[in-house]
Length: 338
Image (cartoon, rainbow, N blue to C red; front, side, top):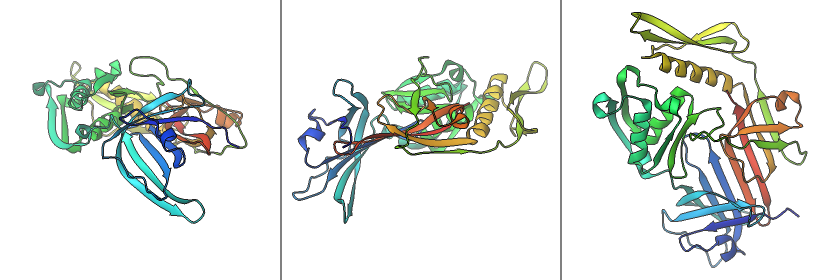
């Protein structure tokens, strides 16, 4: 028999749905993503007469998960968005409430067009990200180095794009993870394994277990030895470049556009190098439920062999699948960290 986890899903009245509907409650699936998409909570019930009815749209639920009541961790606050119904001959019918992170507000999803420059009070990427965060009612939490990077040419255009889409594009350009979470818009360097406040994320240790699945795909690198990003040096009156070196390979990868500053060129070359490296190793690992496993944390496989254990893994997504009759499995998706 599977070890039974402690699951708490409470709505506005504070009552735990897992206890209130103990005969209908199947379990939860919690999705924690490192990049711009919203985290998700799936609340699963057996569907039988008399049928349970879904709550009003945007009803808030808070989820806690752990192996004991005392050790349970709050995974987040979520808003109900839609209902998923399904049925199978063997397992019967099911109703699942699909909820998205409450930090993923309508203001972040709103599509608009505008520009950012010094006249609008935006000199750096940090200025733009702060504006997007404050409009969404979130507190900005931005890595200081990324915060200070000036806008290329002093100008940034948002064209028919959502706020979170623009923020994610900025993160992609700078090699950063942008995510709304815990009432904040967090922006941190990918592979830093740190929060914007500077505290370290706890590593996810995954001991080898023949009862849990895994899959790893390790590819040869593209063959590039360095990434070059050009920028215009106004003091010297000529272009210069920043280089980011890669291990192995002989070819040179040059970014096509000039940056407006040495700092921006350095960030752009690091971000491009990170993308070239990240696609060379991906994987997923299943493990017994781990409440401290979060996206963006370092991952430490143990006992899978030196070619897997030695990789500098980063969690890009974490899935918790738990139920009173199902136990609790945590699945970690990984890629090579910079």
